[in-house]
Length: 423
Image (tube, rainbow, N blue to C red; front, side, top):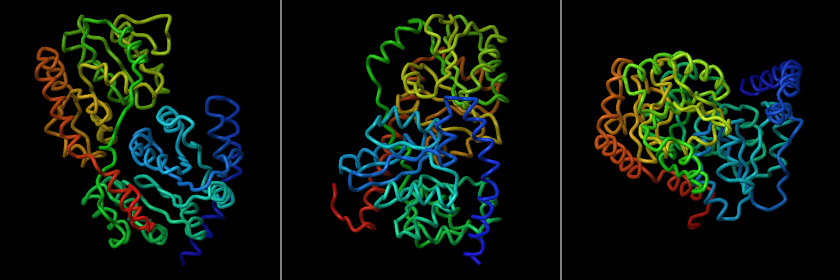
């Protein structure tokens, strides 16, 4: 049955490819900034062939995932591995920022067996790591067929996605068995992973590597950003927002009656939406400009239209509001980056997408159950610098206390790879 389902999946890939080809070629022609991405997805561009000895390949999609694997990447570079990272457009930007040309960053083609097999052969990895939970049946099968060990690291599944995976459990389960080991973020994740068909004997809880974040700040760049912002203003960063919540958040800020004293830094979750966010801020009476517009600076704030520099703005912030947390269907976004810089963080009532992280950190962040409460919280923090400082420092202490998952993961992989002492 497994072989039959796999063959059907491959046939569907052949059927879908012509349609994807047309759609992606059009996208590649129309937007030169994403051209390499779409051509890579079609198997027209491949990663550089590995001619330098031992290699590992890490598949990490989001900006947060690419940032979270930093300790693992650094360790492997020190061991003189040739490191490959497959990711998305945003992940690519972050990888280049963090690692430069020290790693080979690329876009993985669609899950087509001829293209995937070619990528595997070009990299010739000693083993492959997939971050969190990504289902690439052809990739998993081809690695298994070539006897290349595959590990699922920082494994996590949201409660809302469990039923979806359970519905396709009989299709996914054979692929789950092809992982050598699965390293889960928490006991809750371990339970959920078992529910969707993963072998409990393959799962080990190693912790959440996102707590091992380490954001490098270039002093000269930060000094330039610092110099470009008003010296005596309250810097309020509102990040990872979605269209449905943005008017309400801006309205809550407006009702705090501190406009004369604040400088807004607004960043949508999808930074390509910067134009609509810019227009919305203007509608609310805020004189803002785009971050990349160096010739003009709005007196009330800026709109971030590139995703790679948020670390600098978190460091510069007085207070941070994390978007997505006011929308039940989104369930929040990563709170650790501003906490790394010891900044007080405000979230809304919905953090289920990061439930374990939220439960661990909830006493060190401010949770607002409504937009009315958001107004009051912004006003209170603005008027009480000492409370802000204490909350930010407390959050950072908890973050530091929970570090070590990357080291646990590396040690476990070494053990299963038969490398017992590589520290």
